[in-house]
Image (cartoon, rainbow, N blue to C red; front, side):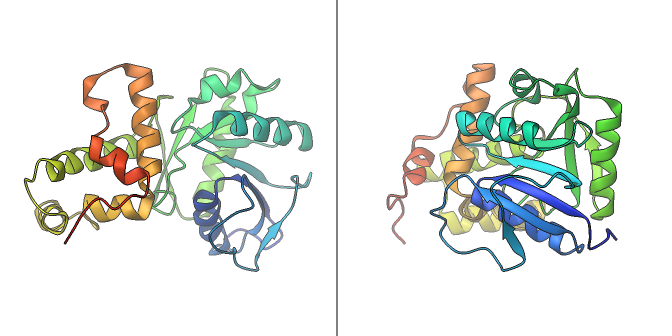
Length: 249
């Protein structure tokens, strides 16, 4: 278990900072953070300590923005200028590859991508995606950090969506196409997937937990990268992402 003196600095979207921080707190890691927006729906627990920039003694710094690449770039610039040259920078690379992010930094060898996506951060497996610039030492430090949190690590290719977010978002999109075509009700779709595949949650309820906009962000990034019809977002999913009422029980 990590020492209580170990600290991590998180910067990014509320849901991701909250989930990543809770995972670290469970292993007695000190959490420092900064949110992209101050207008969060709820306050974070008292053991999350807000700080405008990372301390120089932070063991790891993590950028957790998927929705806005301009904000993400500013966050990475802040991290790079605030921490020692040897401190690894972990960055969610679900909607923007770590290779693209590397072009924003002077020292891209300490940048490594991770699969930062709501509901998946707290799972047992963490995906790590290095770029061609990432040093082996950076990969080792990132892997060792996740090992101390009790997680397994998988090294994956640096591609939009990585593995788990890509598959999950495509599954949700297909379920919403089925819903739109009146194949089954939301409850029946969820029940079929939970009983038929032993998933912990059905795709419709899972989308609600993730946030439908987060699902759309990944699918739009995949479609923009690969230009394939299979990533076309269901019109109903787009309506759901606006927060409008979409289903009458």
